[in-house]
Image: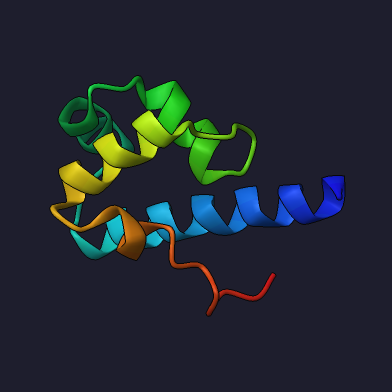
Length: 78
């Protein structure tokens, strides 16, 4: 179970990083848009931290996408 959770956390981090870079944003810029710290954005993108639902909503709003689009990680293989 822990391995599965870890894989999901890493995939979500990868999706956030891809969405951020697709928009030409730095981690600092995303952090400012989502009212988060740059350190926390880095930890989430690298799969070191599990973002809460509230955090995922903030990030989705910063990207101007729906939450469901942000958490659609089925196409990512690690």
